[in-house]
Every structure is written in structure tokens, then in C-alpha cells.
Image (cartoon, rainbow, N blue to C red; front, side):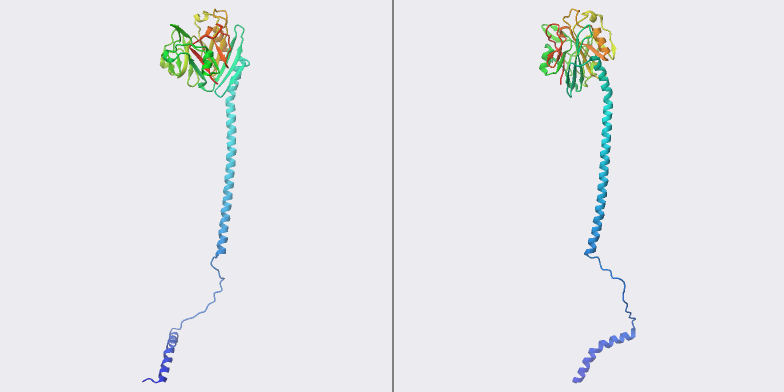
Length: 358
């Protein structure tokens, strides 16, 4: 049996045993223990203050970049504006230079006509009315610039279904369609108490009585869809259709073609020699010139000869010209008034009229 003293000794032995074991290990292994003091400067980890400063630097850099970009865009916009202004100035100058020959040519035409007695001007048409008195006859002239081909039409008194049988004065046609000006157009033939347009007649692109090849001295005159005066003698419908006529009528004779005077048949020089006349022609810039000569009768001793009108048109620079129906048919309406003095004492009723619209 263990005495109390032994128990106490045993307790202290158990208590100190680990310490002695550690001392024995240190005795046998002799570890080199070194104590060093790190004197390097201490660097703290990045905190909120440092992060804010870095973000501000990035924002400043972005702001500077944006400012530079805006300045570059502004400079590019300014350069674009300057370039656009320069190009617009060049275009304006080019347009003015392009129109200059046209203005010069028009002044040459006008100088031979004199001062217009009246003018109608719109975005569709320009009509200038002149009074002429060359000495041997008295006449009126219309110089017309078609800015829109649809500003000129041809009226047909009778319906196409009836072959155009019918007649009306030029003034009536002008008022019926609300036109600004009008002249008589093609010839006619009377049959069974009805008045029909002579030979080939085209209205709204349709042939009223079909196509009839030009015979004797007859010729066709009208307007193409592009607004050009067309005319002459045609041996086939296809030949005429190639010019794309929108309207036209027939009479006799051709006075000028491509700037060359055409031979006037002796019959038309003498029967009658002088008479009221209506002729139509065009300049090289497609302006139209219409002359309506006054005469107090159809007996050959008043009005103009075809040679006189041919020479007048030629000297004015007209390149193509055609004689329309004359005598008592010759009529000129301008702004609702009868300008010429009809030889019948009143306007004659005719099947076709050329009308001009403002």
C-alpha cells in the first residue's frame, strides 16, 4: 500500500516529467536559435483613402480624354461646315455660270422682239406678249418657255369617239379649260354639216382618226411628252410614234427645219398671197415663238405672206417652224382677251386649239 509521502512524490514526478523531457530534447539536438529584428519600413495594405486617390486619377484621365475627343469632334465639325460652305459656293457659282449662256441667248432673242407688252410667269411657264409692226403687216408674238411640258395642251372640240367632229372658238376653249393663253391649231374639213380636224390628229397620246401618212404638202406639228416641239412629214405611224407625241394637228406647209428655210409650194405662196396667219416655231433651247399676223380679209391684199413670216422667224433664230391654219381661223387669246383682230369680224370656230396654262 502506497504511503501519503509516496503519493506526493509521484504527483510531482508526473507534473515535472514533460519539462525534463523537453530539456533532454534541447540538450541532444542543440537547435540554432537566432533572434533578428526587421528594420525595413512598414508598408500598410491599400486602404479606402488610397483607393479613392487612384480612382480620382483615373477619372481625371478619362475627363482629359473626353475633352480631347470633344475638341477633335468640334474641329472636325468646323472643318465639315467650312467644306460644305465652300462646296455650296462652288455649286452656286457653277449654276450661275451654267445659266449665263442661257440668259445671254435669251437676251439676244428678246432684243429682236422688243419690249414685252405683257408677261405671265409661274413655276410652270413664262409667256411674253409682243406687238410687231415690220411695215408690211401687223402681228403679235408670244415667246413661251415651258418649264413643265404639261403647261401646254391641245383641245379637241368634238369627242374622240366621234372622230373629233365639232368646233369652238379659241376663246371658248381657253375658258373651258381655264387656260392663260391660246391659239388656233390645225386645219379642218367640213362634211355633212360637221367640222372635223384635218388628217393626223393626236390628243393625249391617242390618234383621233388613226394615222394618215403625210400627203401633198400637209405636215404634222405637236409636242412630245418631254416638251419638245415636233413636226414634219411622216410616212408611217411608227415614224411619228418614235417622237412620242402627246398631242398634235395637221396643216401646211413647213417653213423651217433644223434652221434651214424650206421650199414653200407655189400654191401656198399665191392662194392667197397675203392673209391673216398663225405660225409656231421653236428655238434651239426649246422656247416657242408664235406669230399671229392680222389681216382684214382673206382676199390676198392684207396680212402677211408666208415668205415674210419665214424670213422673220429665220432672222430671229428659230430653227423649226410650221404654218397653222390661217385666214379667219387665226386667233390669239391672252389673259382672257382676244388680242388679234379676226378677219371674219369675230372668232371662227375650229376643231383644235393649242392652249397654255399658268
